[in-house]
Image 1 (cartoon, rainbow, N blue to C red):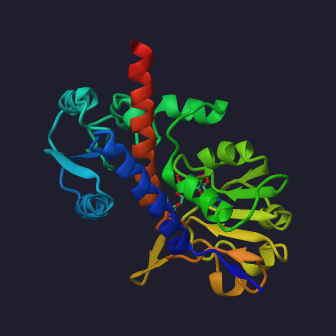
Image 2: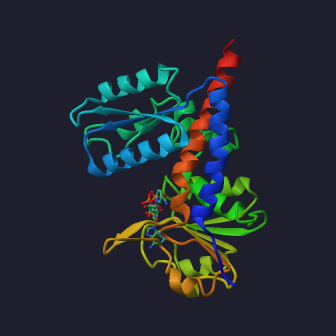
Length: 287
Ligand code: NAP
């Protein structure tokens, strides 16, 4: 029978761990604080910031929203980030996207202190992710792995086919899955004969953003299917996988919604806690 990989259940386990970690930090006198920087008034970013505020306060994390106008210069944004970098009470910085078109996203992102980069996007963290060093990792590929690991699925020796090589999900996942001893194949829009690759996979991870891309005939019977894709169709959130048909073939599968996406916020807050520990270590090494 197909196993449903329940993101909400796994998120519950992670939240319990997070609550304990935050309680321990507070006992030591550290009040974890997440700072969100929003440039402009993009409604989706504002809605996400409001959601993060609720989730943070539930977890006992102090949340501060810092807003700059849409017209703010690149220098103003960088100076604001520098302020947050040097504020010892701020432990994590989340730079909301999109940034205004006159701003160079990469240059601005590189100003965020790597140890406060809860999104795991800074080149320092990306470099350590590739080389296997300790770093803050991006939440969505982490969710793809956690939902399997916490459901008792080992990656060791498995052939994982990742569909999508985007910077947010597919590409970082390659290195994270290699670190878990999976054998990894990466497919993308120029891959010729995508089904010939997915049919060989023990695990298929879809990270594209194209509803219905992964169909039942592309899946080896019994394989694990993890759907990270998110699209809106007729007001409904859907993934990349034809869930109803693929679940008849797969051994285990994540739903959308209620799968990978359910874990991302809690994993981002776990990054905040990990960042606090790395910041404490860095201070000890300075002495
Ligand atoms: P992205 O940067 O747009 O990358 C999409 C990838 O899909 C690209 O590598 C592209 O190939 C590939 N692709 C496009 N059409 C394809 C096709 N027909 N066959 C095979 N590959 C194809 O996306 P992303 O930022 O990595 O995000 C991927 C998905 O995850 C999106 O749906 C996004 O909304 C979702 N997401 C979910 C969460 C969550 O919390 N669950 C968080 C972040 C993102 P090329 O490289 O050749 O163009």
